[in-house]
Image 1 (tube, rainbow, N blue to C red):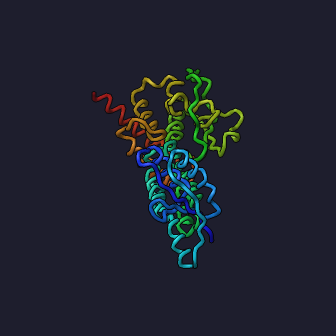
Image 2: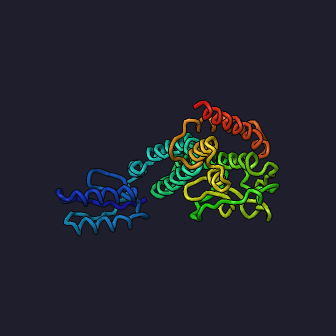
Image 3: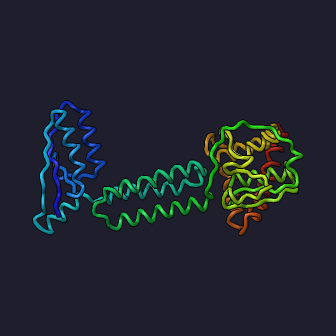
Length: 314
């Protein structure tokens, strides 16, 4: 197997060039044969051309040489220069940390972290010229992380709409079917509880896989294009409070703050972690979305009563 070596010497006073060259060598995955001598497999040698030209343009010395291993022993030595085990170890720790923080981050921030880790793996794999078990282990760990995220937060998180909030006539929303995404979590569970408790006591719920499945006459909530969804940094629960003129209820506003934090992050709320823990317990003991809503509703009823009692004592 052939390699290409870049032999270089940089101007001593050009720190900007040194940093630029160091970053380029690292980005392209160059192996360090010794100080000032960097290797790449011949199939990736084109990456060295630009670095060489940059160094020469700034008054430094750079030249490329072709190298061929004398035998298997030296080839093994060259290949060790490209061992990415430590890099995969760093990535594995990032994946573990992301998995451990999924619940704490809330769906939107957790999704961002999963995407960041997901982008890091292809970048590392692109310079893993002699891939081994570490790459496969990282791929499996990433798949586990994505599965954990999907299990905790169903896909299709709504984006924040810029449309203005509007007050609605509550009479138009009684005895209706309300549709939202299946496998409901904090915002959807809290919103469904609010709907049945304060807006439409005879509400029925349709749990849909994707927005296109929303029944024609149903009231959609918490998905892109729904009648009630995230608006101007407010999660769906908060939008419903304003739309139905319920935001002056301090107990509901307190629940809204906890729901907001658990769903999209922001200002920490003292009771949020306990609420999340109880909802996890409810989810672990039911087998359907309707049963989960029933269990979650008992939790929100108690939380609401607690906030009301606390306000009355002040």
